[in-house]
Length: 154
Image 1 (cartoon, helix red, strand yellow):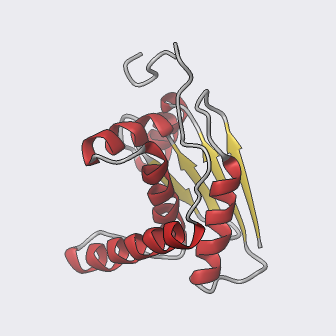
Image 2 (cartoon, helix red, strand yellow):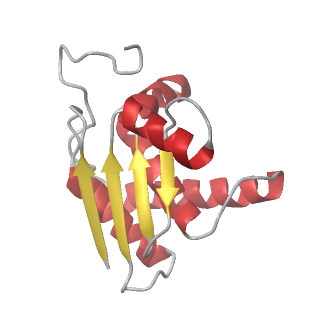
């Protein structure tokens, strides 16, 4: 099982935490050890282009999942930061949640109706809280370097 994590943004992100999370979630979900997962952090413009191309929806989104071997997940830290602020928790926690959310989509979970949403969101919360409890030290927080331009406002 392999997890490749890349950061194409100016955000300071501890990529090992997300690699560890990907391996841990796939193990918890009993995914084949032959599976590969890619997690990519991008700016608002690239994810907005993907959002339009693949979903025919305008604007940047928080996370998109693309099934391949297991698949690819693309996360926008800028949108995650806004959602974290609105939810009253840290950006790292939000991005960990989005990573789990993306993996669950790759495994066939969805939240189109209320029952699916209850099941998927309950499972992602359980996985997140268990990962945090088991890991205890999540390393450096996700942060935006001082003086960076707000890509969502631009």
